[in-house]
Length: 66
Image (cartoon, rainbow, N blue to C red):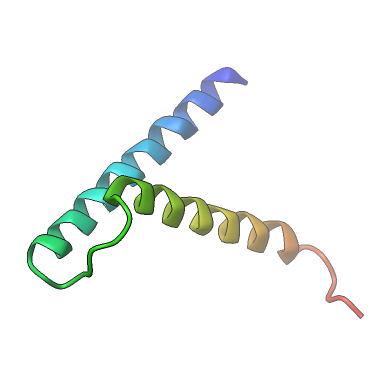
């Protein structure tokens, strides 16, 4: 389903853009420290968030490990 993959990428790109803009705003006002490039940090944060979200969805149906 290339349409779904394309839409997913569009959504994720928008989230990364919004997160990077927020990081830049917080850095500009002195509320966040300097560090990695805002876009790189935003991509990483969103990737980790997506990974946790997907893992929690798929593990929700699995019984607790023994």
